[in-house]
Image (tube, rainbow, N blue to C red; front, side, top):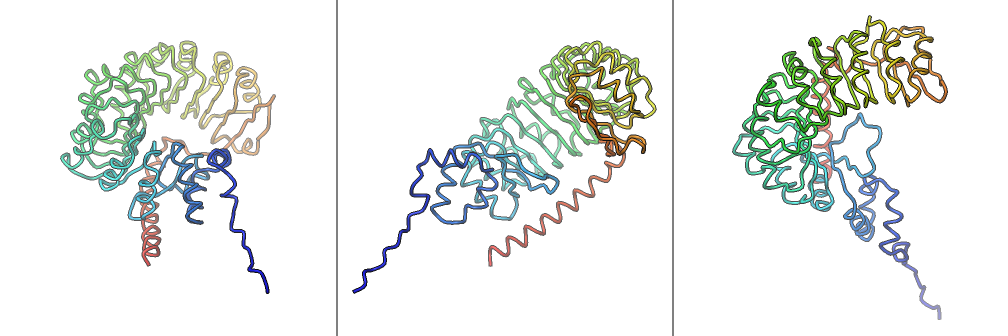
Length: 403
């Protein structure tokens, strides 16, 4: 009589304990782990057990990104059920998340008690609707909030932020923002402020600037010229600044001297016309400066000599539309020995093929679009098309799942 066949159903899951799995899975990006979660129930349990011990970021799937940060999951928070599923499964591990409506926000409020950063996009609601999700009462650990294309006004922003002492606030493409909310929100711990493409923004020179003295990072880009004037005028009240990026049509008289007084400034990026004598005042005054971006260098002369003479501490340098020659590159390399990488964009044609190394420093000439060029006005339409295409794709995926 034949003996019954003995099958060995033990797998590697039976031989490794929790510590071993932690040691192995720490080398696998969270996004890849999530993709394998449906392999089996046992494997799902192992994945969830591991992911609950790490900090997870859930963000909008962006086709522009070639690869995601290690613990970032690109899940689209819309009708596609994966967002709801994974927000509930990993809620306690989620430290940064992205939402597009009040339904998403309600789910995040319920499932993500350890949230540290929130990106709110395209929120459209009344002041009373958003008030019930105010940050102070519902997100105890939140430190950063970003608003992108949110069609709400200053009163709604004030009610939503409430008295929450945030460290970082970003407003991008918020057309109804005027800036009056800064006079009422808590700016005690505010370290970083980004104001970008907010057409109705009004920087309240005397009441708001006095409340932004704790800032270490300030970026003001693609706003009306009065905002650029006000920021330049009030720089002396922001003595703790370490990073400053400013787009303004015209440089105000006295700007180099005001910037030169920022003894902690490590990064400076400007897009207005800066003369070589003004640049020299900046470099002499900002002794802590390590990174410099000048985005309107066309027809500016003397930059190379000034940077070579006073930029010896720079580790990063970007000059846009600069007229440079081989000798200029060599002079900069010799004058700035600490540079890690320097890029020059929109250089003359004869230098386009130049990509070589000087004493370990790679010098790259590339043709790029100025971040603050008029061509950026077409950015809206491209983003609208991208958004529509993603929504269509998700509707199809959702219908397939239902079927």
